[in-house]
Each structure stands twice: as structure tokens, then as C-alpha cells.
Length: 159
Image (tube, rainbow, N blue to C red; front, top):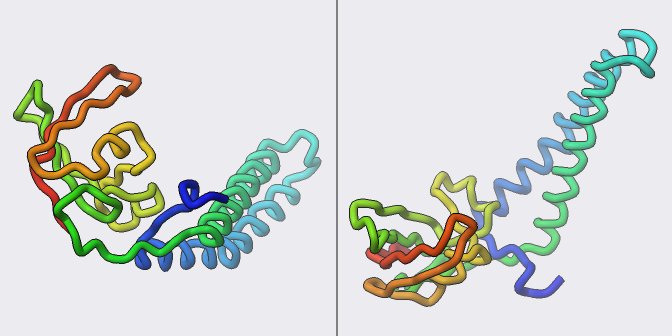
């Protein structure tokens, strides 16, 4: 996996993902096992909607476990940002729509796994995230998205 594909996460996010993984591997699997057992007890598993639902839930659980293991194995710990003069991972950026100055939005530039911090997260790999990287307060960015072309001004940065 190249460095550009590796998730760059805060230590807080890594700790939360590790705790989620442990919970899913222990209590989550135990609960799933009980759900499968109950569904089997309802009778013939070939025509048992509860059993099919339980198997689908089990597949989702195992998929999430595999995703967490992959992220945790390959993640890089992001140092706390000390330079909030430019947009970079770990910096909270506020932007204003240049066509509608009444519209402002704020994002934490980080991987989606940072959602545990409670802030709205914007991936640095997204079209807007890529356009914002390296920008300063007062800079404008234009980017293409499925909904059209958008232009924003950077109005605030917080480390």
C-alpha cells in the first residue's frame, strides 16, 4: 500500500477504531452467534427469513472487522497540527461560497475514520479536499463535483 493510500489519522481516531474493533470481535461476534442460533431454532434454514437476515448481518459484521483491521494495520498517526496558516490534514477550514456569501461551511480535513471527533470531515482525497490543500485564508478554490462547478473562499483556519 502506498503512502497516498494510507489513512493518516489522529491518535484519538486510532484509539477509537481499535476499541470498536475489539468490541466487534468480542461482544459483536457473541451477539451474532446468539442471533444465528436463535434463527436456526426456528426450523428449516432453507426457508428461514430470520436465518438469512442473520447471515447477512454476520457478513456485514465480518466486513467491518476486516475493514478496521486493514485501516489499523496501515494507518499513519498524524501529529497534531501546529501550523494552521495553510489547509492541511488536521486543520479545520471554513469556506464561503463566492456566489452566495451567506453560505459558509466548516470541515476538518481528515480521513473519514476521523468522524469520531464529532466534526464534519472532508477527505483530503475528495475533489474539494484536494482543491483546498495548501490554501490560505483569502484564497479561492474552484472544483468540479457531480453537482457542477463550485468556487469557495477560505475564510478561517483552525489548528
